[in-house]
Image (cartoon, rainbow, N blue to C red; front, side, top):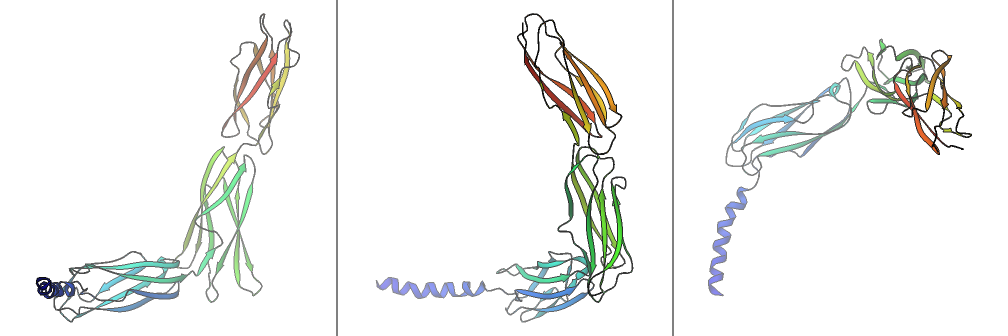
Length: 331
């Protein structure tokens, strides 16, 4: 036991300087909160960084993780016991809402080569529109239909907007109108009616609307406008039940298809792989309603017939109607 008692003090003496050397040489606050700031404000705050160690510290890099924050140092080298002043500038026009970012300082401090200072705050918008996120989604819209969405633009009390406008693209499918209003307290706001319609092709639609004002720090806000354009064509019947099929007789039937909203419907082609099926197109209402006359003549040896008739439409936007048929053949 006696040899081990002599070793312990020696180990403590050797580790003591190593533990002390691990203390950070560059010291600063862990965070700073700018609080609530209007969007037309620039606010500065100064933070003091210290070097309480016996060795010099050199700053190798300084950056912020947000474009709304600018950071600068008055010196890049701190002698033992020295100080540096870190200036933080919040440019509120470059952000909005909650801020949770960092200012990062890189140095040659062996114990902590990177000092991170958390920056928080809340930027209050001067004007805004009542749209969540950056997308206005109309959802499913039937081809030929016209749908609208009312969007309000508001301004923070104590501020004034002299110019308020909205632009859309594409202008053929999207239209926007503006109305100036007042709330119960007499504060102004603007209502925009955004309309989606016109000649739309089946499938995904994407456009944009941009609201503009004379608020110089943030004059514009842009939003995607999306929708899924679905067919408005109704097909009757959806399948053909071939009742009364018989050898030596011709079965006749009819398929009608109509665009229930708007016009512009055209029939590209129609086809059936079965040679016993004959098809003829009949125009009932140009651009809206058509019929396909169907004749089926069974052949000797047929016991049953089954297949499908394909009709290719453009309403605009391509769509293929498939109408199945099936029936037994009487001798």
